[in-house]
Image (cartoon, rainbow, N blue to C red; front, side):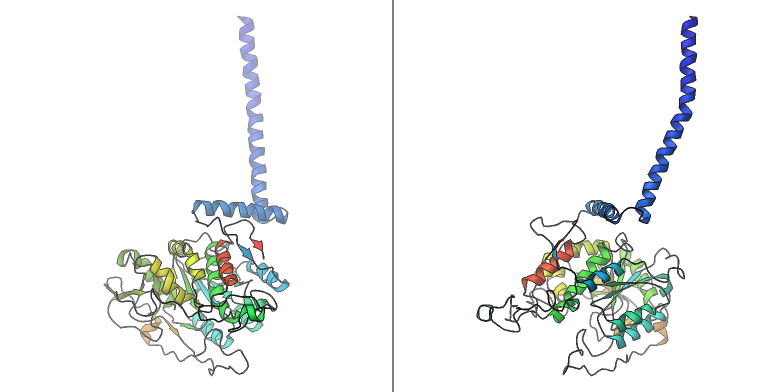
Length: 439
């Protein structure tokens, strides 16, 4: 009995000594784990390991969101130049002005302004944005098609909100002697490939690609994929993102009206895909009714959420193979009709944004093709345009007869080259595969 009692006491003493030791081991493991996590978070790992860890985390998130990809397609991106690589590095920089606006409130909207090279227009847009009520709550992302120093400096001068610049690194404007820019040996205009021994696929009208024209669609699609699935600031953001262009004058009430429409959409128009700041007819000022309007999605000040983006992304093949160089006409003529339901957008009875200017996105920059526009916006504002002017108790008037481009329109062409179509598809895949090949 004494021996048994002694044995019990011995085991008890061992347990009493082991308990603190076990606690120390657990604490040590937790500390090491925390250090490893901090290393991943703050970049103490070597760049390849850090990049691999981020790619793994991104792939896990993507897998959870069930992105459907075609296993038979291999994405290929053009080999980047030194300028393209430097712009890619700038895309990873954090937003500026974060010290002045350290937090974004719940219910805020992120705004994406996409631009090319119209500095006079951009100054007007930036000035209009500076007067918008609530703009200090937003993250403004400016997406550049190409690199133009004057455009860059204008955006760097923004101080009224958080602002982040991104540059399309595969813009045709960055490639002077290779695809997607002008490639030696490419067919031009209506040249016959067999006769001229040139390369390229003509569009449905017999015309070969023009880099400055195809950049319209490339930039918009790259931007959408990058904002929704690529940027650290937005790839986990599921709410509405507002998209505007460099020739959209934004009214002082635009941000608050957009917030109202986003909040009202689930109850007032659950079938609506988006909200708009202006009618789909770019020349219209609105009906002035005491009701909201649901109509086809317009291209001035439109906002939608990740659920809608997933529906659009699933139609990448339709978007990328339709022979039409304009992104919006492509959406109206092929993507929206393929969703098998009217794609309504909710808006107010008065516009909160306006299209101004006469020059198209790529007009006015070629010798002998100077667009006659001094960049002065002739947008008149009434007092009601400076305050929120949408009422929650208003009914919704549905405009069921959709005007403009619809299913059956065959496109204006300009998008017949298979290289453009494959690059477009590669943009849809680039954030969902580990390492897209370089063409």
